[in-house]
Length: 300
Image (cartoon, rainbow, N blue to C red; front, side, top):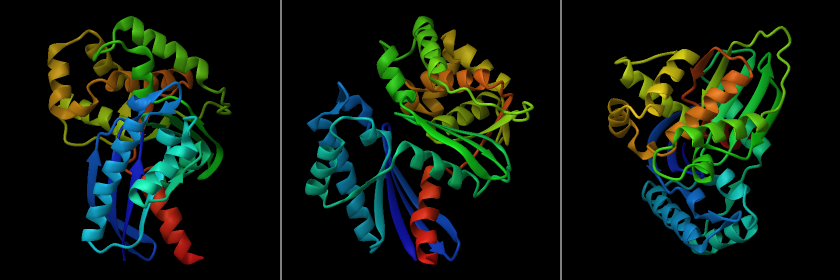
């Protein structure tokens, strides 16, 4: 069967259509809109303009899904609607405008779905998973492929940009303030004998960083990214290297303003937990959602 999901995020809204056969699924089509919904939030309240943007994107995606005669269509939201005061009113507005009932994930649910999705294509038994989204950052500590801790922190690359950055490109002082804020927010985690040297990274921000490193180093693919590789590109960007910013515009132009807050967040996390390397998973919350809401549902 073919199914469709939409991930209504703080930065991007993505439609994904999958073919599901038994326990397996494969992506047939993906379409992304940079809605930047976090930009429509003031005093922890989503504006009517933001709701209209979200509704227009969802209406367009709904039409695409109907064109393909797919009836199994779900929409879920994360920090975009979770970390605001008027969540219930927003959900009702969108339902009235589009006919779509949104599945609003809690922070813990999002973190666990990230974890479930990532482990579908990563053979890792223990470690720390990190997802830096537009409006939240998820952390999952796991051992023997079982979650020990799953939490969501109320900041991401876009919300940090809006909070600390005054222009398109962050200044050194603004990034330093960002770093201090992120560090204060991180929970103390015991890694026993300090065995976790590598983390699993999921989500658009981290995949964008990988693209930037691949282009910078003129490589086709890379399995593990070291702290030093990330830091080298980061330092070039904070020196306002023209070559590196041209690289951003060629590679990830839609993230020109959020890439530095995102990289600051990742490097701060790696520093704080003494992590030396990062494995990037192409699977995350969307794949975890497909497995949880469709495949496991049909098994029950």
